[in-house]
Length: 341
Image (cartoon, rainbow, N blue to C red; front, top):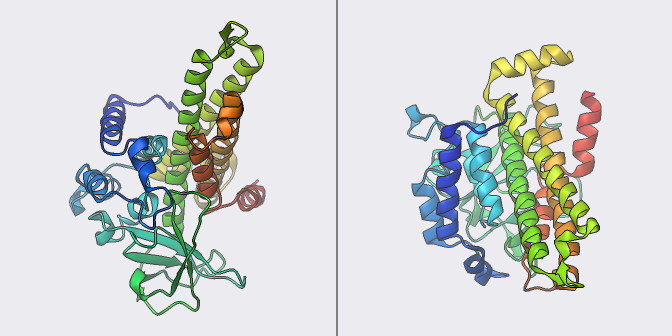
């Protein structure tokens, strides 16, 4: 596959970058750290007007009509600025849920399992509705839409990511609206690809921050970026980013184009269903690793400054960890890939 962006995709990337730099600068976003509602309504409206939430909705249905390949371009930019809110779920739900396409915030939860640990809902104040997906083993069940106001929620007083407020969801869940015909596998895959693209944005941005610091910080009369150990850290981080980006883009194209999926599946002696899960799981696994490992490397490049609250890299690391624990943990993704090998 050719992973160079097309002219249209470059124009989309530039437009979204300019938008998020204008309405979601990190300095402004940080003012909401640890608040119950971290989403700026004006910024959310600007994203809706730009077509972010209707990105994957066909033009015939009033959407932008782009595919996941373009979605990865957009969400990499959103990851770069740590855009807060249920962006991934709302956009992924939009092709099946008109309210999400209009920019009304929605989240997605897995149906509670046997664990005594209650499910956690991100952005409980912002989210208007929650789509509860059947667990992967419950293939006969359908997804259910529940209004957030109907859920019994207990606020988590201090979440790992200060820009991702949480609430514990009481179970059993109330009855909701059954979403007949919703392809829950396709929804999961869209979410995983968009989450992977967000992680790539995080991975790339922490490398950029660390590189800029290494060029300006001097020790022994020279910039620390000239030291071999720093060069190796940043070169490895860049390689991880590019590998993850290629994997995420490949997964997006595989989901977008059935002909690509069919040809690749024939080559690997897999069904198209198996191939799509393999592409998506591998992409998210690589993207999660790139974001977390690169953030750690960026903290190391900053030395003692890297551990301070003022330096924003800890926010990137925390968001990366939140995304890595959602819709496929490292062990779950590895197990899935092993089963498809």
